Image (tube, rainbow, N blue to C red; front, side, top):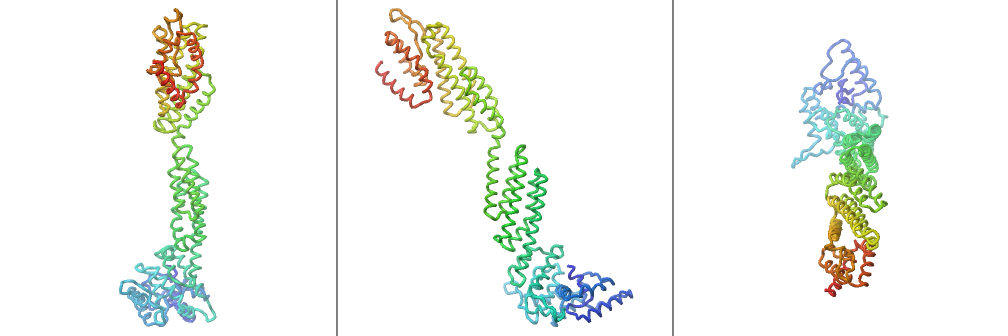
Length: 583
Protein backbone atom coordinates (compact mmCIF):
# COMPACT_ATOMS: atom_id res chain seq x y z
CA UNK A 1 0.00 0.00 0.00
CA UNK A 2 1.19 3.51 -0.80
CA UNK A 3 1.26 4.68 2.82
CA UNK A 4 4.02 2.09 3.41
CA UNK A 5 5.81 1.82 0.07
CA UNK A 6 6.19 5.61 -0.35
CA UNK A 7 6.30 6.44 3.33
CA UNK A 8 8.39 9.62 3.99
CA UNK A 9 10.51 7.77 6.55
CA UNK A 10 11.24 5.03 4.00
CA UNK A 11 12.20 7.51 1.29
CA UNK A 12 14.71 9.03 3.70
CA UNK A 13 15.90 5.57 4.71
CA UNK A 14 15.09 6.17 8.39
CA UNK A 15 12.95 4.42 10.99
CA UNK A 16 9.95 6.10 12.58
CA UNK A 17 11.09 8.01 15.63
CA UNK A 18 14.14 9.53 13.99
CA UNK A 19 14.92 12.94 15.40
CA UNK A 20 14.24 16.16 13.53
CA UNK A 21 18.00 16.61 13.23
CA UNK A 22 18.37 13.18 11.61
CA UNK A 23 15.53 13.95 9.21
CA UNK A 24 17.13 17.19 8.08
CA UNK A 25 20.63 15.71 7.76
CA UNK A 26 19.39 12.67 5.77
CA UNK A 27 17.33 14.79 3.40
CA UNK A 28 20.30 17.05 2.73
CA UNK A 29 22.63 14.09 2.21
CA UNK A 30 20.32 12.42 -0.28
CA UNK A 31 19.75 15.64 -2.16
CA UNK A 32 23.49 15.98 -2.66
CA UNK A 33 23.82 12.44 -3.97
CA UNK A 34 20.93 12.97 -6.42
CA UNK A 35 22.30 16.33 -7.54
CA UNK A 36 25.67 14.72 -8.23
CA UNK A 37 23.87 11.89 -10.00
CA UNK A 38 25.50 9.38 -7.69
CA UNK A 39 24.04 6.16 -6.38
CA UNK A 40 22.28 6.52 -3.04
CA UNK A 41 23.69 4.49 -0.15
CA UNK A 42 22.04 1.15 0.44
CA UNK A 43 22.87 0.73 4.10
CA UNK A 44 19.79 2.68 5.25
CA UNK A 45 16.35 1.51 6.36
CA UNK A 46 14.50 1.82 3.05
CA UNK A 47 14.57 -2.00 2.61
CA UNK A 48 14.48 -2.23 -1.23
CA UNK A 49 13.35 -5.87 -0.95
CA UNK A 50 9.88 -4.64 0.07
CA UNK A 51 9.24 -2.98 -3.29
CA UNK A 52 9.96 0.05 -5.43
CA UNK A 53 9.65 3.58 -4.06
CA UNK A 54 9.60 7.07 -5.53
CA UNK A 55 13.06 8.48 -4.71
CA UNK A 56 13.75 11.59 -6.76
CA UNK A 57 15.14 15.03 -6.09
CA UNK A 58 11.53 16.29 -6.03
CA UNK A 59 10.37 13.61 -3.59
CA UNK A 60 13.28 14.28 -1.26
CA UNK A 61 12.59 18.01 -1.41
CA UNK A 62 8.95 17.38 -0.51
CA UNK A 63 9.75 15.31 2.56
CA UNK A 64 10.00 18.35 4.81
CA UNK A 65 6.42 19.29 3.87
CA UNK A 66 5.13 15.76 4.57
CA UNK A 67 6.83 15.63 7.96
CA UNK A 68 6.40 19.27 8.94
CA UNK A 69 3.54 18.89 11.43
CA UNK A 70 3.46 16.52 14.37
CA UNK A 71 0.21 15.04 13.06
CA UNK A 72 1.98 14.28 9.77
CA UNK A 73 4.79 12.53 11.63
CA UNK A 74 2.31 10.46 13.63
CA UNK A 75 0.47 9.40 10.46
CA UNK A 76 3.73 8.40 8.72
CA UNK A 77 4.94 6.55 11.83
CA UNK A 78 1.77 4.41 11.95
CA UNK A 79 2.76 2.94 8.56
CA UNK A 80 6.49 2.43 8.96
CA UNK A 81 8.87 0.42 11.11
CA UNK A 82 9.71 1.63 14.61
CA UNK A 83 12.73 0.72 16.68
CA UNK A 84 11.97 0.67 20.39
CA UNK A 85 15.36 -0.70 21.35
CA UNK A 86 14.31 -4.35 21.33
CA UNK A 87 17.04 -6.77 20.27
CA UNK A 88 14.62 -8.77 18.14
CA UNK A 89 13.78 -5.65 16.13
CA UNK A 90 17.47 -5.20 15.31
CA UNK A 91 17.71 -8.79 14.07
CA UNK A 92 14.58 -8.38 11.95
CA UNK A 93 15.83 -5.11 10.42
CA UNK A 94 19.17 -6.76 9.54
CA UNK A 95 17.27 -9.60 7.85
CA UNK A 96 15.29 -7.09 5.77
CA UNK A 97 18.46 -5.24 4.76
CA UNK A 98 19.81 -8.57 3.53
CA UNK A 99 16.60 -9.18 1.59
CA UNK A 100 15.35 -11.99 3.85
CA UNK A 101 11.70 -11.03 4.39
CA UNK A 102 10.72 -14.47 5.65
CA UNK A 103 13.28 -14.37 8.48
CA UNK A 104 12.11 -10.93 9.61
CA UNK A 105 8.48 -12.06 9.49
CA UNK A 106 9.22 -15.11 11.64
CA UNK A 107 11.03 -13.01 14.25
CA UNK A 108 8.06 -10.67 14.76
CA UNK A 109 5.48 -13.41 14.35
CA UNK A 110 6.96 -15.36 17.28
CA UNK A 111 6.64 -12.30 19.51
CA UNK A 112 3.09 -11.47 18.48
CA UNK A 113 1.21 -14.75 17.90
CA UNK A 114 1.34 -17.85 20.04
CA UNK A 115 0.43 -21.28 18.65
CA UNK A 116 -1.34 -23.31 21.32
CA UNK A 117 -1.23 -27.09 21.80
CA UNK A 118 -4.52 -27.62 19.98
CA UNK A 119 -3.23 -25.74 16.95
CA UNK A 120 -5.21 -22.55 17.58
CA UNK A 121 -3.51 -19.16 17.42
CA UNK A 122 -3.71 -16.47 20.10
CA UNK A 123 -2.17 -13.09 20.73
CA UNK A 124 0.84 -12.90 22.92
CA UNK A 125 0.52 -10.65 25.92
CA UNK A 126 1.76 -7.20 24.88
CA UNK A 127 4.60 -5.97 27.06
CA UNK A 128 7.66 -3.75 27.22
CA UNK A 129 9.66 -6.50 25.59
CA UNK A 130 7.48 -7.04 22.51
CA UNK A 131 5.19 -4.07 21.91
CA UNK A 132 7.21 -2.79 18.92
CA UNK A 133 6.87 -6.26 17.36
CA UNK A 134 3.06 -5.79 17.16
CA UNK A 135 3.55 -2.59 15.17
CA UNK A 136 6.39 -3.85 12.97
CA UNK A 137 4.57 -7.14 12.33
CA UNK A 138 1.66 -5.07 10.94
CA UNK A 139 3.87 -3.04 8.56
CA UNK A 140 5.63 -6.09 7.12
CA UNK A 141 2.52 -8.32 6.98
CA UNK A 142 0.53 -5.72 5.09
CA UNK A 143 3.08 -5.96 2.25
CA UNK A 144 3.12 -9.76 2.22
CA UNK A 145 0.48 -11.67 0.22
CA UNK A 146 1.06 -14.70 2.44
CA UNK A 147 -0.08 -12.94 5.59
CA UNK A 148 -3.61 -12.23 6.75
CA UNK A 149 -4.00 -8.44 6.46
CA UNK A 150 -6.84 -8.35 8.98
CA UNK A 151 -4.65 -10.02 11.60
CA UNK A 152 -1.93 -7.47 10.87
CA UNK A 153 -4.35 -4.56 11.25
CA UNK A 154 -5.57 -5.95 14.58
CA UNK A 155 -1.98 -6.27 15.78
CA UNK A 156 -1.40 -2.57 15.25
CA UNK A 157 -4.75 -1.71 16.89
CA UNK A 158 -3.73 -3.72 19.96
CA UNK A 159 -0.43 -1.82 20.01
CA UNK A 160 -2.18 1.58 19.80
CA UNK A 161 -4.73 0.58 22.44
CA UNK A 162 -1.99 -0.43 24.89
CA UNK A 163 -0.14 2.03 27.06
CA UNK A 164 2.92 1.46 24.88
CA UNK A 165 1.30 3.20 21.94
CA UNK A 166 2.20 6.49 23.56
CA UNK A 167 5.89 5.61 23.21
CA UNK A 168 5.64 5.88 19.43
CA UNK A 169 3.82 9.21 19.67
CA UNK A 170 6.46 10.63 22.01
CA UNK A 171 9.21 9.35 19.76
CA UNK A 172 8.01 11.19 16.65
CA UNK A 173 6.44 14.40 18.00
CA UNK A 174 7.24 17.39 20.12
CA UNK A 175 6.69 17.01 23.83
CA UNK A 176 3.74 19.40 23.70
CA UNK A 177 1.82 17.34 21.16
CA UNK A 178 -1.07 15.23 22.45
CA UNK A 179 -3.56 12.89 20.76
CA UNK A 180 -5.99 10.55 22.47
CA UNK A 181 -6.31 6.86 21.62
CA UNK A 182 -9.64 7.30 19.87
CA UNK A 183 -8.37 9.92 17.43
CA UNK A 184 -5.16 7.99 16.84
CA UNK A 185 -7.03 4.78 16.05
CA UNK A 186 -9.56 6.56 13.82
CA UNK A 187 -6.70 8.19 11.88
CA UNK A 188 -5.21 4.73 11.35
CA UNK A 189 -8.48 2.97 10.49
CA UNK A 190 -9.63 5.68 8.08
CA UNK A 191 -6.47 5.16 6.04
CA UNK A 192 -6.98 1.39 6.15
CA UNK A 193 -10.53 1.78 4.88
CA UNK A 194 -9.35 4.06 2.09
CA UNK A 195 -6.67 1.59 1.02
CA UNK A 196 -9.19 -1.28 1.09
CA UNK A 197 -11.49 0.79 -1.11
CA UNK A 198 -8.62 1.38 -3.56
CA UNK A 199 -7.89 -2.33 -3.68
CA UNK A 200 -4.45 -1.99 -2.09
CA UNK A 201 -5.21 -4.32 0.82
CA UNK A 202 -6.29 -7.87 0.11
CA UNK A 203 -9.46 -7.92 2.24
CA UNK A 204 -12.84 -6.22 2.48
CA UNK A 205 -14.68 -4.22 5.11
CA UNK A 206 -16.95 -7.07 6.09
CA UNK A 207 -13.99 -9.25 7.10
CA UNK A 208 -12.36 -6.37 8.93
CA UNK A 209 -15.47 -5.42 10.87
CA UNK A 210 -16.22 -9.07 11.63
CA UNK A 211 -12.85 -9.34 13.40
CA UNK A 212 -13.02 -5.93 15.03
CA UNK A 213 -16.38 -6.69 16.68
CA UNK A 214 -14.70 -9.23 18.94
CA UNK A 215 -12.11 -6.79 20.28
CA UNK A 216 -12.26 -3.83 22.62
CA UNK A 217 -10.54 -0.60 21.62
CA UNK A 218 -11.30 3.08 22.13
CA UNK A 219 -12.41 3.98 18.60
CA UNK A 220 -14.54 0.89 18.07
CA UNK A 221 -17.99 2.49 18.42
CA UNK A 222 -17.07 5.59 16.43
CA UNK A 223 -15.47 3.51 13.71
CA UNK A 224 -18.41 1.10 13.44
CA UNK A 225 -20.82 4.02 13.26
CA UNK A 226 -18.80 5.70 10.55
CA UNK A 227 -18.51 2.49 8.54
CA UNK A 228 -22.25 1.87 8.89
CA UNK A 229 -22.89 5.39 7.63
CA UNK A 230 -20.76 4.64 4.59
CA UNK A 231 -22.80 1.53 3.86
CA UNK A 232 -26.03 3.47 4.33
CA UNK A 233 -24.76 6.21 2.03
CA UNK A 234 -23.83 3.70 -0.67
CA UNK A 235 -27.21 1.97 -0.45
CA UNK A 236 -29.00 5.33 -0.54
CA UNK A 237 -27.05 6.33 -3.65
CA UNK A 238 -28.08 3.11 -5.41
CA UNK A 239 -31.72 3.67 -4.43
CA UNK A 240 -31.63 7.14 -6.01
CA UNK A 241 -30.08 5.72 -9.18
CA UNK A 242 -32.84 3.12 -9.31
CA UNK A 243 -35.60 5.70 -8.83
CA UNK A 244 -34.29 7.78 -11.71
CA UNK A 245 -33.95 4.78 -14.02
CA UNK A 246 -37.37 3.41 -13.07
CA UNK A 247 -39.10 6.73 -13.72
CA UNK A 248 -37.38 7.06 -17.08
CA UNK A 249 -38.21 3.55 -18.26
CA UNK A 250 -41.01 1.62 -16.48
CA UNK A 251 -40.81 -1.03 -19.21
CA UNK A 252 -37.39 -2.11 -17.91
CA UNK A 253 -38.10 -1.53 -14.23
CA UNK A 254 -37.74 -5.26 -13.49
CA UNK A 255 -34.12 -5.19 -14.63
CA UNK A 256 -33.61 -1.96 -12.68
CA UNK A 257 -34.90 -3.65 -9.52
CA UNK A 258 -32.68 -6.70 -10.00
CA UNK A 259 -29.64 -4.48 -10.54
CA UNK A 260 -30.47 -2.59 -7.34
CA UNK A 261 -30.61 -5.86 -5.42
CA UNK A 262 -27.26 -6.99 -6.79
CA UNK A 263 -25.48 -3.71 -6.06
CA UNK A 264 -26.77 -3.38 -2.49
CA UNK A 265 -26.80 -7.00 -1.31
CA UNK A 266 -23.23 -7.01 0.05
CA UNK A 267 -23.51 -3.54 1.59
CA UNK A 268 -26.73 -4.43 3.41
CA UNK A 269 -25.28 -7.71 4.65
CA UNK A 270 -22.18 -5.97 5.96
CA UNK A 271 -24.26 -3.23 7.54
CA UNK A 272 -26.28 -5.83 9.42
CA UNK A 273 -23.12 -7.57 10.55
CA UNK A 274 -21.69 -4.30 11.88
CA UNK A 275 -24.61 -2.74 13.73
CA UNK A 276 -27.05 -5.64 13.93
CA UNK A 277 -30.24 -6.23 11.95
CA UNK A 278 -32.38 -4.50 14.60
CA UNK A 279 -30.41 -1.24 14.59
CA UNK A 280 -32.65 1.72 13.69
CA UNK A 281 -30.53 2.94 10.78
CA UNK A 282 -30.22 -0.60 9.48
CA UNK A 283 -33.97 -1.28 9.60
CA UNK A 284 -34.72 2.13 8.09
CA UNK A 285 -32.46 1.73 5.07
CA UNK A 286 -33.53 -1.90 4.66
CA UNK A 287 -37.19 -0.88 4.46
CA UNK A 288 -36.37 1.99 2.10
CA UNK A 289 -34.47 -0.41 -0.14
CA UNK A 290 -37.32 -2.94 0.01
CA UNK A 291 -39.78 -0.20 -0.93
CA UNK A 292 -37.80 0.75 -4.04
CA UNK A 293 -37.42 -2.87 -5.15
CA UNK A 294 -41.16 -3.30 -4.61
CA UNK A 295 -41.91 -0.18 -6.64
CA UNK A 296 -39.73 -1.44 -9.49
CA UNK A 297 -41.85 -4.59 -9.61
CA UNK A 298 -45.09 -2.60 -9.39
CA UNK A 299 -44.16 -0.17 -12.18
CA UNK A 300 -43.02 -3.00 -14.42
CA UNK A 301 -46.22 -4.97 -13.76
CA UNK A 302 -48.52 -2.01 -14.38
CA UNK A 303 -46.71 -1.11 -17.59
CA UNK A 304 -46.98 -4.57 -19.14
CA UNK A 305 -50.13 -6.15 -17.67
CA UNK A 306 -52.46 -4.98 -20.48
CA UNK A 307 -50.23 -6.45 -23.20
CA UNK A 308 -48.53 -9.49 -21.67
CA UNK A 309 -48.06 -11.48 -18.49
CA UNK A 310 -45.46 -9.71 -16.31
CA UNK A 311 -46.40 -11.58 -13.14
CA UNK A 312 -43.31 -13.82 -12.94
CA UNK A 313 -40.82 -10.92 -13.01
CA UNK A 314 -42.97 -8.84 -10.66
CA UNK A 315 -43.37 -11.67 -8.14
CA UNK A 316 -39.61 -12.27 -8.19
CA UNK A 317 -38.99 -8.64 -7.22
CA UNK A 318 -41.76 -8.64 -4.60
CA UNK A 319 -40.22 -11.69 -2.93
CA UNK A 320 -36.76 -10.11 -3.09
CA UNK A 321 -38.21 -6.98 -1.49
CA UNK A 322 -39.74 -9.08 1.28
CA UNK A 323 -36.39 -10.77 1.95
CA UNK A 324 -34.84 -7.32 2.35
CA UNK A 325 -37.63 -5.70 4.40
CA UNK A 326 -37.08 -5.43 8.15
CA UNK A 327 -40.14 -3.68 9.58
CA UNK A 328 -43.62 -5.20 9.75
CA UNK A 329 -45.22 -2.44 7.67
CA UNK A 330 -42.79 -3.00 4.79
CA UNK A 331 -43.19 -6.77 5.07
CA UNK A 332 -47.01 -6.52 5.02
CA UNK A 333 -46.84 -4.30 1.93
CA UNK A 334 -44.73 -6.92 0.17
CA UNK A 335 -47.20 -9.65 1.13
CA UNK A 336 -50.12 -7.62 -0.21
CA UNK A 337 -48.39 -7.05 -3.55
CA UNK A 338 -47.54 -10.74 -3.79
CA UNK A 339 -51.16 -11.68 -3.07
CA UNK A 340 -52.56 -9.16 -5.56
CA UNK A 341 -50.37 -10.34 -8.41
CA UNK A 342 -51.06 -14.00 -7.63
CA UNK A 343 -54.79 -13.27 -7.77
CA UNK A 344 -54.27 -11.39 -11.04
CA UNK A 345 -52.40 -14.41 -12.39
CA UNK A 346 -55.24 -16.70 -11.34
CA UNK A 347 -57.76 -14.45 -13.11
CA UNK A 348 -55.70 -14.22 -16.29
CA UNK A 349 -57.81 -16.77 -18.26
CA UNK A 350 -60.96 -14.75 -17.51
CA UNK A 351 -59.29 -11.60 -18.82
CA UNK A 352 -58.53 -13.41 -22.06
CA UNK A 353 -62.24 -14.00 -22.63
CA UNK A 354 -63.40 -10.69 -21.22
CA UNK A 355 -64.93 -9.71 -24.58
CA UNK A 356 -66.91 -12.94 -24.74
CA UNK A 357 -68.05 -12.62 -21.12
CA UNK A 358 -69.29 -9.08 -21.71
CA UNK A 359 -71.09 -10.16 -24.88
CA UNK A 360 -72.97 -13.01 -23.18
CA UNK A 361 -73.73 -10.85 -20.13
CA UNK A 362 -75.20 -8.16 -22.40
CA UNK A 363 -77.26 -10.74 -24.28
CA UNK A 364 -78.59 -12.17 -21.03
CA UNK A 365 -79.60 -8.73 -19.84
CA UNK A 366 -81.35 -7.82 -23.09
CA UNK A 367 -83.00 -11.25 -23.26
CA UNK A 368 -84.97 -10.55 -20.10
CA UNK A 369 -86.86 -7.72 -21.82
CA UNK A 370 -87.65 -9.60 -25.06
CA UNK A 371 -91.09 -10.96 -25.81
CA UNK A 372 -91.55 -14.70 -25.44
CA UNK A 373 -91.09 -16.20 -28.90
CA UNK A 374 -89.39 -19.24 -30.39
CA UNK A 375 -87.27 -17.02 -32.65
CA UNK A 376 -86.01 -14.90 -29.78
CA UNK A 377 -84.96 -18.01 -27.85
CA UNK A 378 -83.25 -19.41 -30.96
CA UNK A 379 -81.42 -16.19 -31.83
CA UNK A 380 -80.28 -15.86 -28.24
CA UNK A 381 -78.85 -19.39 -28.17
CA UNK A 382 -77.25 -19.17 -31.63
CA UNK A 383 -75.56 -15.80 -30.93
CA UNK A 384 -74.14 -16.96 -27.58
CA UNK A 385 -72.78 -20.34 -28.75
CA UNK A 386 -69.62 -19.05 -30.55
CA UNK A 387 -68.70 -16.89 -27.55
CA UNK A 388 -69.20 -19.82 -25.20
CA UNK A 389 -67.00 -21.99 -27.45
CA UNK A 390 -64.18 -19.43 -27.13
CA UNK A 391 -64.60 -19.39 -23.34
CA UNK A 392 -64.50 -23.18 -23.29
CA UNK A 393 -61.27 -23.31 -25.32
CA UNK A 394 -59.57 -20.86 -22.95
CA UNK A 395 -61.02 -21.83 -19.57
CA UNK A 396 -61.63 -25.52 -20.16
CA UNK A 397 -64.85 -27.51 -20.23
CA UNK A 398 -64.72 -28.21 -16.50
CA UNK A 399 -64.21 -24.58 -15.44
CA UNK A 400 -66.90 -23.59 -12.94
CA UNK A 401 -67.36 -20.06 -14.28
CA UNK A 402 -67.72 -21.24 -17.88
CA UNK A 403 -70.21 -23.90 -16.78
CA UNK A 404 -72.28 -21.32 -14.88
CA UNK A 405 -72.47 -19.00 -17.88
CA UNK A 406 -73.32 -21.78 -20.33
CA UNK A 407 -75.98 -23.17 -17.98
CA UNK A 408 -77.45 -19.69 -17.55
CA UNK A 409 -77.86 -19.36 -21.34
CA UNK A 410 -79.57 -22.78 -21.51
CA UNK A 411 -81.86 -22.08 -18.55
CA UNK A 412 -83.00 -18.74 -19.96
CA UNK A 413 -83.61 -20.11 -23.45
CA UNK A 414 -85.51 -23.15 -22.15
CA UNK A 415 -87.52 -20.94 -19.82
CA UNK A 416 -88.71 -18.85 -22.77
CA UNK A 417 -89.55 -21.99 -24.78
CA UNK A 418 -91.64 -23.41 -21.90
CA UNK A 419 -93.46 -20.10 -21.59
CA UNK A 420 -94.24 -20.07 -25.32
CA UNK A 421 -95.49 -23.65 -25.31
CA UNK A 422 -97.62 -23.13 -22.21
CA UNK A 423 -99.18 -19.98 -23.64
CA UNK A 424 -100.06 -21.86 -26.84
CA UNK A 425 -102.13 -24.30 -24.78
CA UNK A 426 -104.07 -21.77 -22.73
CA UNK A 427 -107.84 -21.44 -23.44
CA UNK A 428 -107.51 -24.13 -26.07
CA UNK A 429 -111.22 -25.04 -25.95
CA UNK A 430 -112.30 -21.52 -26.80
CA UNK A 431 -109.64 -21.28 -29.53
CA UNK A 432 -110.84 -24.48 -31.18
CA UNK A 433 -114.46 -23.36 -31.02
CA UNK A 434 -113.57 -20.04 -32.65
CA UNK A 435 -110.80 -20.97 -35.07
CA UNK A 436 -111.36 -24.65 -35.63
CA UNK A 437 -109.70 -27.77 -34.37
CA UNK A 438 -107.25 -28.39 -37.22
CA UNK A 439 -106.07 -24.81 -37.35
CA UNK A 440 -105.32 -24.69 -33.62
CA UNK A 441 -103.57 -28.06 -33.68
CA UNK A 442 -101.47 -26.83 -36.60
CA UNK A 443 -100.40 -23.76 -34.70
CA UNK A 444 -99.56 -25.87 -31.66
CA UNK A 445 -97.56 -28.33 -33.77
CA UNK A 446 -95.60 -25.48 -35.31
CA UNK A 447 -94.86 -24.05 -31.88
CA UNK A 448 -93.76 -27.41 -30.47
CA UNK A 449 -91.62 -28.20 -33.50
CA UNK A 450 -89.88 -24.82 -33.27
CA UNK A 451 -89.25 -25.38 -29.58
CA UNK A 452 -87.78 -28.81 -30.28
CA UNK A 453 -85.48 -27.35 -32.91
CA UNK A 454 -84.14 -24.87 -30.39
CA UNK A 455 -83.84 -27.63 -27.81
CA UNK A 456 -81.76 -29.57 -30.31
CA UNK A 457 -79.42 -26.58 -30.61
CA UNK A 458 -79.26 -26.24 -26.82
CA UNK A 459 -78.45 -29.93 -26.41
CA UNK A 460 -74.95 -29.16 -27.73
CA UNK A 461 -74.33 -26.64 -24.92
CA UNK A 462 -72.40 -27.60 -21.77
CA UNK A 463 -74.60 -27.62 -18.64
CA UNK A 464 -74.22 -28.36 -14.97
CA UNK A 465 -75.93 -31.49 -13.66
CA UNK A 466 -79.03 -29.69 -12.38
CA UNK A 467 -79.55 -27.83 -15.65
CA UNK A 468 -78.95 -31.01 -17.67
CA UNK A 469 -81.59 -32.90 -15.66
CA UNK A 470 -84.11 -30.10 -16.08
CA UNK A 471 -83.30 -29.84 -19.78
CA UNK A 472 -83.92 -33.56 -20.34
CA UNK A 473 -87.23 -33.39 -18.49
CA UNK A 474 -88.45 -30.46 -20.56
CA UNK A 475 -87.19 -32.02 -23.78
CA UNK A 476 -88.99 -35.28 -22.97
CA UNK A 477 -92.21 -33.39 -22.22
CA UNK A 478 -92.00 -31.48 -25.51
CA UNK A 479 -91.53 -34.74 -27.42
CA UNK A 480 -94.51 -36.26 -25.62
CA UNK A 481 -96.72 -33.27 -26.43
CA UNK A 482 -95.54 -33.33 -30.04
CA UNK A 483 -96.43 -37.02 -30.31
CA UNK A 484 -99.84 -36.40 -28.76
CA UNK A 485 -100.60 -33.64 -31.26
CA UNK A 486 -99.52 -35.90 -34.12
CA UNK A 487 -101.79 -38.63 -32.85
CA UNK A 488 -104.64 -36.15 -32.44
CA UNK A 489 -104.27 -35.13 -36.06
CA UNK A 490 -104.63 -38.78 -37.10
CA UNK A 491 -107.57 -39.35 -34.70
CA UNK A 492 -105.77 -42.12 -32.76
CA UNK A 493 -105.55 -40.29 -29.45
CA UNK A 494 -105.48 -36.84 -27.98
CA UNK A 495 -107.91 -34.70 -29.89
CA UNK A 496 -110.40 -36.81 -31.89
CA UNK A 497 -113.96 -38.23 -32.02
CA UNK A 498 -115.51 -39.94 -29.06
CA UNK A 499 -118.29 -42.52 -29.25
CA UNK A 500 -119.98 -41.89 -25.91
CA UNK A 501 -122.43 -39.30 -24.77
CA UNK A 502 -125.07 -39.82 -27.47
CA UNK A 503 -122.61 -39.43 -30.27
CA UNK A 504 -121.48 -35.99 -29.20
CA UNK A 505 -117.91 -34.98 -30.08
CA UNK A 506 -115.71 -34.29 -27.12
CA UNK A 507 -112.23 -32.72 -27.26
CA UNK A 508 -109.51 -34.66 -25.49
CA UNK A 509 -106.76 -32.75 -23.73
CA UNK A 510 -103.15 -33.14 -22.47
CA UNK A 511 -102.46 -34.01 -18.83
CA UNK A 512 -100.33 -30.97 -17.98
CA UNK A 513 -100.08 -31.27 -14.22
CA UNK A 514 -99.66 -35.06 -14.26
CA UNK A 515 -96.96 -34.82 -16.92
CA UNK A 516 -95.16 -32.19 -14.86
CA UNK A 517 -95.41 -34.27 -11.70
CA UNK A 518 -94.25 -37.56 -13.24
CA UNK A 519 -91.79 -36.05 -15.71
CA UNK A 520 -93.10 -37.80 -18.83
CA UNK A 521 -96.27 -37.84 -20.88
CA UNK A 522 -95.91 -41.64 -21.30
CA UNK A 523 -95.49 -42.38 -17.58
CA UNK A 524 -97.81 -45.31 -16.61
CA UNK A 525 -99.59 -43.20 -14.01
CA UNK A 526 -100.20 -40.45 -16.61
CA UNK A 527 -101.64 -43.03 -19.00
CA UNK A 528 -104.13 -44.18 -16.30
CA UNK A 529 -105.21 -40.57 -15.67
CA UNK A 530 -105.73 -39.98 -19.42
CA UNK A 531 -107.88 -43.11 -19.62
CA UNK A 532 -109.95 -41.91 -16.65
CA UNK A 533 -110.39 -38.57 -18.37
CA UNK A 534 -111.43 -40.05 -21.72
CA UNK A 535 -113.49 -42.97 -20.47
CA UNK A 536 -115.14 -41.50 -17.39
CA UNK A 537 -115.07 -37.71 -17.07
CA UNK A 538 -116.08 -36.94 -20.65
CA UNK A 539 -119.23 -39.03 -20.26
CA UNK A 540 -120.78 -36.53 -17.86
CA UNK A 541 -121.55 -32.82 -18.16
CA UNK A 542 -119.88 -32.04 -14.83
CA UNK A 543 -116.82 -34.03 -15.93
CA UNK A 544 -116.58 -32.12 -19.20
CA UNK A 545 -116.90 -28.83 -17.27
CA UNK A 546 -114.05 -29.96 -14.97
CA UNK A 547 -111.89 -30.82 -18.00
CA UNK A 548 -112.46 -27.37 -19.52
CA UNK A 549 -111.52 -25.61 -16.27
CA UNK A 550 -108.52 -27.89 -15.77
CA UNK A 551 -107.08 -27.11 -19.18
CA UNK A 552 -107.82 -23.47 -18.81
CA UNK A 553 -105.84 -22.99 -15.63
CA UNK A 554 -103.37 -25.88 -15.45
CA UNK A 555 -100.77 -24.41 -17.93
CA UNK A 556 -100.41 -21.35 -15.73
CA UNK A 557 -100.07 -23.54 -12.65
CA UNK A 558 -97.46 -25.71 -14.34
CA UNK A 559 -95.45 -22.64 -15.38
CA UNK A 560 -95.31 -21.43 -11.78
CA UNK A 561 -94.52 -24.80 -10.26
CA UNK A 562 -92.25 -26.41 -12.86
CA UNK A 563 -89.07 -26.03 -10.80
CA UNK A 564 -90.61 -26.65 -7.38
CA UNK A 565 -89.50 -30.23 -6.75
CA UNK A 566 -91.14 -30.48 -3.33
CA UNK A 567 -94.50 -29.37 -4.74
CA UNK A 568 -94.19 -31.92 -7.56
CA UNK A 569 -93.50 -34.66 -5.02
CA UNK A 570 -96.62 -33.71 -3.06
CA UNK A 571 -98.71 -33.69 -6.25
CA UNK A 572 -97.40 -37.15 -7.20
CA UNK A 573 -98.35 -38.52 -3.77
CA UNK A 574 -101.90 -37.10 -4.11
CA UNK A 575 -102.26 -38.45 -7.64
CA UNK A 576 -100.96 -41.86 -6.58
CA UNK A 577 -103.68 -42.07 -3.92
CA UNK A 578 -106.32 -40.94 -6.45
CA UNK A 579 -105.16 -43.53 -8.98
CA UNK A 580 -105.59 -46.28 -6.37
CA UNK A 581 -109.24 -45.25 -6.07
CA UNK A 582 -110.03 -45.20 -9.80
CA UNK A 583 -108.28 -48.44 -10.78
